[in-house]
Image 1 (cartoon, rainbow over the protein chains, first blue to last red):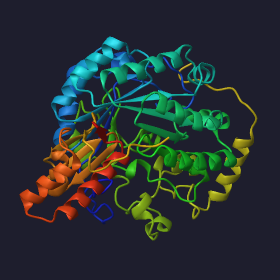
Image 2: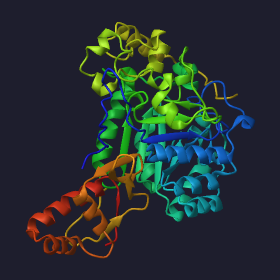
Image 3: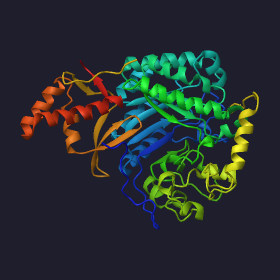
Image 4: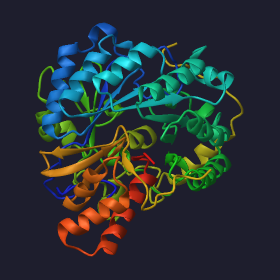
Amino acid sequence: MSDTITLTADAMGKTPRAPPPMAMLAELTHRCPLACPYCSNPIALTRANEELSTEAWIGVFEQAADLGVLHLHLSGGEPAARRDLVDLTRAAVSFGLYTNLITSGVGLTEARIASLADAGLDHIQLSIQGISPESADRISGYAGGYERKMAVAGWAADAGIPLTINAVCHKQNMGEIDAMIDLAVRLKARRIEIATVQFHGWAERNKAALMPTREQVERATRTVAKARENYQGILVIDYVPADYYSKYPKACMGGWGRVGLNVTPSGRVLPCHAAETIPGLSFETIRESSLARIWYDSDAFNAYRGDDWMPDLCRSCERKAVDFGGCRCQALALAGDANATDPVCIRSPLREHLTREADALAATPSVDFVYRGR
Amino acid sequence: MDGPVISGASVVKLARGVRLREDAVRGQTVLLAPERAMAVDDIAVAIVEALDGERTLDQIAADFAEKFDAPAPQIAEDVMAFVRELSIRRMLEIVE
């Protein structure tokens, strides 16, 4: 039994032929009542009147299933802000897609969750921002959010929909990881995803307020290891450590254009959330092209496949088959060049500078958040 | 806090949100769970399909041993190892 499907296509060859995508993230809308200061949505948010119609989304789901997508993530913004969420779910399920709702919980009612269950929704991922109303609602910028999340978890359990708790951790809540894990167990979640904040989108603006210290990161890693032992068979814990304190970059998105794709509210197809920050790449929309053509043949998706694009440092490195050169958006943000070695890598000439910057940001005393969209 | 203990007397089935699916594009069968897709071979498919929430794991192993004319202890061991793996990944509902 292997953990993930072996990708048979030779992704490292000189003439890369991509395997079919496993997962699609459908950002149904950018609208969201919360204002999390690390939101992965772009700084320029798509307006409601630019969003794809119900029929257009259903067409994308059908194309995705035909293309080989197995997991569909309905996300946003807050996907519950779409009035057609139940219809979209029913359509996705009808194409055989494993349908997962990634939600803040705000906008869901007991009746709506029951309708989603009837429509065949496979799974809910519910975000938490902290372990008390005070801490969580301050971070999300939404009073009453925490209480609503607790109610949503109960309704999901009553409806029989399996639950994962999503927790983004950062300087201001890293000490709560233990309690977040306990909360997930109390909420009858089967899984928790604890992801250290990634500095793209709004998080880049809030770097000084969010950057954890090295001590926090080391303690978090120990906490997670211990909790995995304690809760074996009860709670699966997926943990994304802070990559600024790692030796090697993360295999961002499992490799550019290799495992998954994102579709924005207006139908633009991206290899990852932040890809639009990279200058010189132009991303097509499903209004003008098919998902299959964009995945296999578009210049943007082929830009960082294989190793032709890599600097010598990466192309000659044995880890290129592990991390695929790291994160292109991070290379752009930190090195000013999307083609550069990810500066997180210890072999990058920029790594020392990055370590100093991270330590300085982590040591910055409390700074006010810039809230998303406010 | 202790996780569930699985024995030959356990009766289990796939948890809600976990299911087998034909993956026509890649020509294989996959077991889908939250954020997980596992390619499963014919033996794994047979075991998963046998987890009906009615028979004990011992009964399932005995039925396989008879059906495939194979040594029961070996089959019981294989079934148990696979089922424990699924349990750790929270893919099972323990019926009793």
